[in-house]
Amino acid sequence: MYENFEELKKDCFSCQKCSLGTTRTNLVFGVGNESADILFVGEGPGENEDLQGEPFVGKAGKLLDKYLEVIGLSRQKNIYIANIVKCRPPQNRDPKEDEQEACINWLREQTKLIKPKIIVCLGRIAATRLISPDFKVTREHGQFIKKGNIYFMGTFHPAALLRNEAQKADALSDFQKLREKMKELEIEL
Ligand code: URA
Image 1 (cartoon, rainbow, N blue to C red):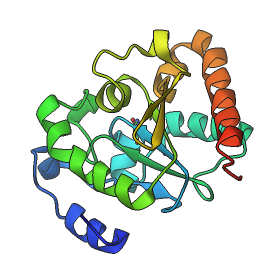
Image 2: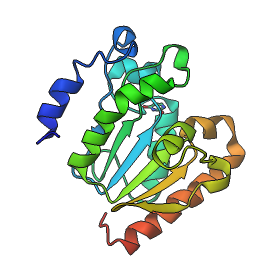
Image 3: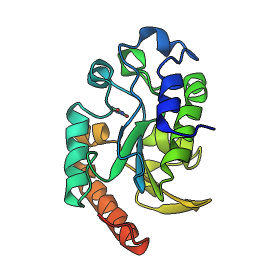
């Protein structure tokens, strides 16, 4: 259990618990407000993220920022963004089970410090890991599930939306549901 982000970052940035540690350019810890009420979780860094050390900075990230803006959220102000794994899987393959297992504790520690009221899982990898192993994004997106003190919701991964325009309307409606949940929980913008 960490007392603050400084101590957590110090340990995390030197992590070599799995082989992704040997191929990374930068570890992508996370970005945003460290006491945000809403935490977004993606899958793992891609090429741009690995080079810049920040999550969701490529094309998919630009799309995510647009959806956030529609409901008054931004990584500079009122949310935190992290990933299931903090180092880039080669060729952007899915993070393997053992890599997720090695890394997930860093996200748990971040979550304990941030204390979010809502966690939004971006795509299958995050949703199956954090909500339920058999989560199906196309079937269960936009639904809130309370576990402990936190509401979880899974939605489409922004990279999937770039490949499949037809899902963009559903994604927008998920963000609107998020806005409604924020109002219900009296989360200020
Ligand atoms: N995709 C993710 O899941 N996370 C990132 O940080 C970038 C792309």
